[in-house]
Length: 257
Ligand code: 0WD
Image (spheres, rainbow, N blue to C red):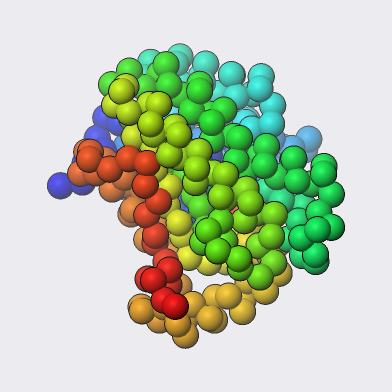
């Protein structure tokens, strides 16, 4: 039985009701986990309002602002986790960013600033969050991140994000190797294309979705809830022997030649 009762889960990356993080938060909650939510702060507080309106139904223990580029906000986030819960069991890393110029045009044209910003937010943030989560995962834990096939193979327009995801997938392995001794497992879910705010920035995403519907063994795309179900499995003791892996939730697209 998949049971997360009594487990504390920190969920990053909820932006709206299409976010993959929202599908994950719902399924963790359904399995009995306590949820804590981070949101990307903006000056007018609009993101916070939107995230609260959406996530209130899960009765979160707290909402905290956390821009992963801001070390103080990361520290404050885990200080809140320590204060409210004392320990953390599940960390969901479900965020990424690339400027438009990193997602279209020639790869050779990507500016340095766009490159470093994207890798800071999309790749290094997993390691940064894991560093702060580690001392709080006193009973072991499960860290889960989201990746895409474009980090392994060249997918049109994924460009800079492909490099970020390649680094992210390798980070999963190095983190798993380090943290295994503390019974902390680290895995990635490689999701098939889903229409979200982030994916709409990738040129030709609709073509990619149609391609998946045509080629993938299941002849359809996946849903946020399906990704959420796999995250719940990876967060639970049912997956206690799995770490350092990238699990494809993509209707089988990855196996096709
Ligand atoms: O097809 C897709 N949608 C796939 C997404 C296929 C495979 C993987 N993924 C990955 C993405 O690369 C990302 O890692 O899943 C993760 C979640 O993406 P999503 O659900 O598609 O996108 P979205 O709902 O836009 O959430 C990403 C959020 C941001 O939303 P916006 O769109 O406002 O940037 O990442 C957050 C933000 O809430 N985010 C940040 N959070 C903290 N600090 C930061 C930051 N600096 N930048 C972005």
